[in-house]
Structure formats: C-alpha cells, structure tokens
Amino acid sequence: MRRFIPFLKSPPRVSVVRLQGIIASAGRAAALNDEGLAALVEKAFTRGKPAAVALVINSPGGSPVQSSLIAARIRRLSAEKKVPVYAFVEDVAASGGYWLATAADEIWVDDNSIVGSIGVITAGFGFSDLISRFGIERRVYTAGRSKSLADPFQPEKASDVKRIKALQEQIHGSFISQVKARRGDKLADRDLFTGEVWVGQKAIDDGLADGIGHLVPKMKEVFGDKVQFAQYSQRRPLLGRLGVRIVDDVAHSLEERASYARFGL
Image 1 (cartoon, rainbow, N blue to C red):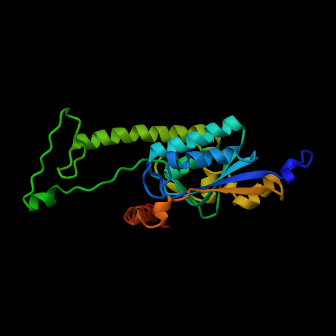
Image 2 (image 1 turned 180 degrees about the horizontal axis):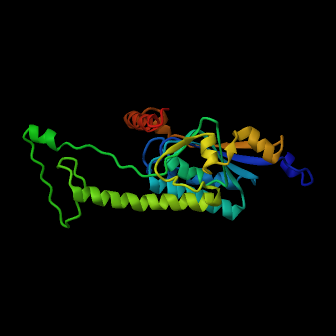
Image 3 (image 1 turned 90 degrees about the vertical axis):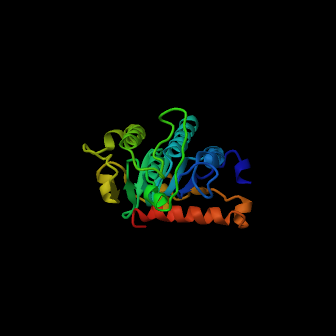
C-alpha cells in the first residue's frame, strides 16, 4: 500500500544485475550475451524508478562483440533514464568482463578481485601432421583467395598469422578506446593494455577501479541504510532446466572452467 500514499516517501531502490559467466553469442547455454540480457537490463533501469543500477560482475571474458553490445546498452539506458551505474567485481572481471565493468560510472573491487586483461586472444589447434599420418587428404575449394583462413588441417601460413594479428589489432584498439573513454584521467600514465591483470588495490592504483567496496555496504553508504535491492539475473530456459540441453551445458561448463582457470580460479 505504501506506493499509493503520495506524501509518504519510499526508500531508495537499487537494481542489482548479476553478470556471471563467459560472454558468448546467443544460443549458448548460460552464456552472457546482449539478446539474453536485453529485457533484464531494460527492467533494471525502468522498474520501480531505481536510484541506481549495480552490476555484480564475475566474468573471465569472451566475445568482444557481445561485450561491446551489452556495455553500450547499459550506457544508453543510464543516459536516457539518468540512472548512475556501479560495478562490483567478485572473483574476476577480465577481458570482456572488464569491458562490462567499464559500463559503470564507478568500479568497486574486493581485495582479491582480478581485473584487467585488456587484450585479444585467438586460440586453436593444428592437425596437419595428424591427418597426413593416417593418409587423409584435405580438399578445400574457394572463390576468393582470402576465403580460407587458418585451416587447422593445413600447415600454418605466415600470411594467415599476419591477417589474424591485423584483425586482433583492430579489436584491441576498440577495447582500448572503450577503457580510455570510460576511465579517462583516472588511468595511470603507463601502458595498461598489454593483457596483464591486476589484483585488488593494484588495479585501483592504476586507475582501473575506484576502490575496495562490496555491494550492500557501499550502496548503504551512498543511499542510506534504508536502501532496498531488487535482484535481476538470467534464468535458464525451462527445457534446459529439465535436462534436455545436458550435452550443451556440459560443453559450456568445460569451456567456462577453462576460462576461469587462466586466472587461477
């Protein structure tokens, strides 16, 4: 009944959006992507007239495109609704995970949070020796000399490596521009874009985060002890919860485990 009494002021409300897991295109079980988060993020900014949106981030990264789309959506809604955004990093906000963190006006970390990895990585396997050992012949036909790139069943070509690195440099440049645009003069005057990671206070010292702080006490500090929290997180599809997508979920879990393992988590 409280909201129907016009002269009774409601306590501040903070929408809490949990962004956990690897970042990948739509269709991947439990992955973070713009399509899957769009409705959830919209509600966080519009439902209940929030005083702020808090992003709780625990992600080792993933797709640069999805990272960019999600961060851009958050910034767009923040500007439209005039709602500030705070990011709270749990275990890790690395690579695309840090890209998401830069969507916030302030980034808060734990003493042990891993932050950074501002770089681009491409990984794969080569099977050319394996298939030749079994007498298997690879046949590929293309129209356009650049159509085939880094075929894992053929010996690595210097020209392919050069092309991949050129693509990586473009994406890396976009990532750097995002960080500089969002963190500005807070960044330390040294090269922070080598793919290195930092922990807790060191990330703060270099301007990649604003301080040590956890969600509830920090929001109470900013909005008062009576602040209320509304939780928003992705829900897995019903069929996935019933086990129909078990194989996909297992594959995703292995990939996610490997991504976190890069940071010793």
